[in-house]
Length: 157
Image (cartoon, rainbow, N blue to C red):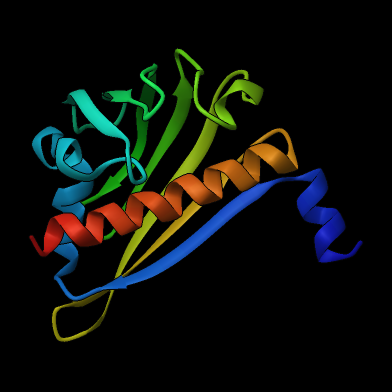
């Protein structure tokens, strides 16, 4: 089976980016409600409510305001937590109103790995699995890339 056929049958998103900060700093950006409120979402999306219970089985929830005036809610449940190294969590849209979320019924899985690649440089690798369609995959890829753009801006304001 070709890679393109495999992606169409099993849509996944894989996004990687290098930031000029430590792995611990980036880990905090992904696990603090205050930090997530500053950056989570692509351009034009703001977080109006965030909560994080950082433990295996704990929940992170975000309410996001979309550019069109709608809101969407996201719930995750932590499956694996390795401070400064790795996060794995379920991903579920509670009020699917943004592009791509409307096609996702149920949970998908997100893994975030933090790997130091130099002096205060860290590679963040996000793998989002279980998306039901190629268009949901493409929308989430755009969303994750936008999130990382926003994180870059938030880190260096």
